[in-house]
Length: 457
Ligand code: NDP
Ligand code: 2IT
Image (cartoon, rainbow, N blue to C red; front, top):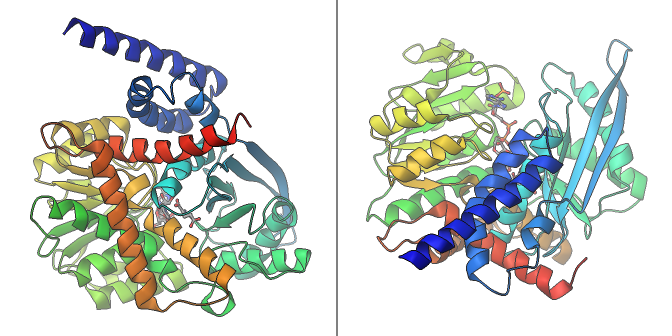
């Protein structure tokens, strides 16, 4: 007992010391500090118990990006005005492969948000079992309301600097919020022109120019496959369950599609203006309407109720007060707070599979874990997207295209392997699976072993 108390004191003081260092070095970066704290909480006790990692400053090295690029992105809008945005690429870790991770175009983008995303990406990519390091980038550019030609000019200017720093063996960006197939196309076209080479430097490409089948679907599908894996541990399935989804972009759309295909009823979707509630469920036809609305018309989710008047729209609200079995936050970071977590729990929600990155605040995560529900952090449950990007890279290198079924099978296997890794490091003595601990330690071990082997670089 005394020994245990002493050990826990040492762990606590190491944690406080480490977090003080991170906070002092990154004072204006709340999202980055939040992401690091969540990892440190579970990984520091593990390091202290495992001599090979102790004293090697591995976590201290991991929170310092290998390189940060920040650059001016000037472009001319349709009215002939010069606009200046800021571009970024965080090259966080290349311990197990080339930097890999998406680009986010959103007005809120800043160093803190991209560093949190790049840090999460390192662990997520390690979990996929594929050889990918971690990175993230983007710009404070707001694609909303811009013409196609404005998007193209912006992407060309952005790539006019980024091309110097990336490459299919160095750093391979992809999409994230505000960056989909259209943007990847314009970015790829400019890279190809500047470098005069056709390589798999970006993933999420179109099918006729190096893209992979299932990549658009992969994040959403993977999030549902992971939820299924969690339910299986309770002898349950997703069939017949009521599901809340937030967001209505890439991840939300395909999470909705797969959940519905597997017999669940998805009753909500949202965007940053509000959410829609369709008690009868958002079936394949209704989802086709949403996909056209969001991907082609680039309109708002509230249009749904004009097409389907039995549904309701709640302006300025998030969907977490609706009664459900499963919640899949698929919009953005910190979109479920403590109050909303309590609401979900009191309404009977018992599975959370995160499609977005860090959508639950630390207080919400602690509430889910205290209630011992099935809770998966994004770095495990949304890893299907980057995993399929890894499969796209493999196909590009081999210069072949795998069939849809083959990619889907590989995606399923990867999600199931990630689930196994979470159990390996996250199962507690009482049988409860702490997916946060499991994902953090499994990701850490893979990266840390590579770092130890490669020396202090
Ligand atoms: P999209 O741009 O396709 O869609 C984003 C959706 O989230 C939109 O409905 C958008 O609404 C909503 N949203 C964005 N920002 C906010 C905000 N601040 N508040 C409320 N709603 C918001 O992006 P993705 O679907 O690709 O990404 C969604 C999430 O999934 C992100 O957290 C991303 O990091 C994560 N992710 C994405 C992967 C991918 O492969 N694309 C892989 C793994 C994780 P609006 O239109 O109003 O902005
Ligand atoms: O957060 C993520 O994992 C992504 N946006 C996908 C990254 C990728 O390289 O496919």
